[in-house]
Amino acid sequence: MDRLFLIGMPGAGKTTLGRALAAHYQLPFRDLDEELVQRAGRSVADIFAAEGEAYFRQLEADTLRAVLAEHERLVLATGGGTPCFHHNMRVLTQSGLTLWLEVPVAELRARLQHAAAARPLLAALPPGAAALEKRLSETLAARREFYEQAALRCHGPACTVEAVFALIQRYRTTG
Image 1: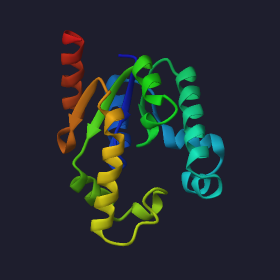
Image 2 (image 1 turned 180 degrees about the vertical axis):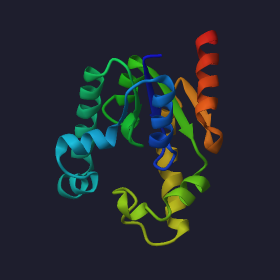
Image 3 (image 1 turned 90 degrees about the vertical axis):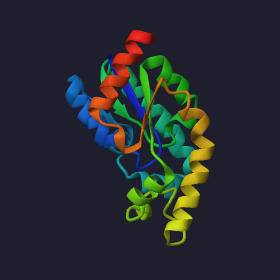
């Protein structure tokens, strides 16, 4: 395995698991949002506020393609919406192995409840768990068709380095 791409909702654990998988497989790790921020010289929130989501999504697609051009081998944690725009999911599936971290909405809400204000697509929500859970459910419904294109799927908190290793081994033997 030369490239592994982690996709899923915000709060699914893509970055945390991605770092661990990169260490396990002795591959470089990149977080697409971190790459984008570094290249743009400003935060995701600042980009959203100044330029809007459409501009951000184009910048995200450009950053994805640049990272892929620079790294023949890596583990990449994508942004939650990355697969859903600019044919990015097709680019990912053609460039490596995709893994969807499928986490229940209630778990995502619990993980994001205290950090929602720092995420541009969640920041404007009224306070409270109900509004956050509703937004996460709606977002997942809109993104599911893209996430389901992943070659591999790992469910919730059971998605550990060992579980992913087993998934990849099964995938290699069954194709």
